[in-house]
Image (cartoon, rainbow, N blue to C red; front, side, top):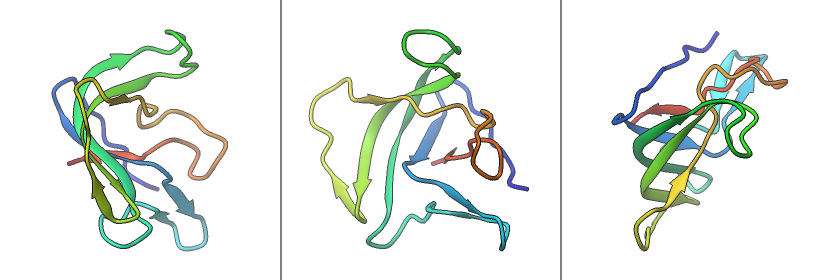
Length: 106
């Protein structure tokens, strides 16, 4: 079972775009920080959005982005106000391992 990290406003985090779970090996996939298939953002949590607010059916983190990495390359973040809203770790999902876990400490 994967450990689910919890975060608060002000925490620096990395949010992976496509985390997955290998049920056979019992390990996380898609959470590498090097290589040509790497895809994540880094930033600071500026809000914890409750379920049902706006278009979010589940609780999310609102992350003010400071770095974007796509295909292993750092991309520029132009302008202020770039945010992403991944689901809060531990949110139930139909995919193994049964909950979200794609946000980690940066």
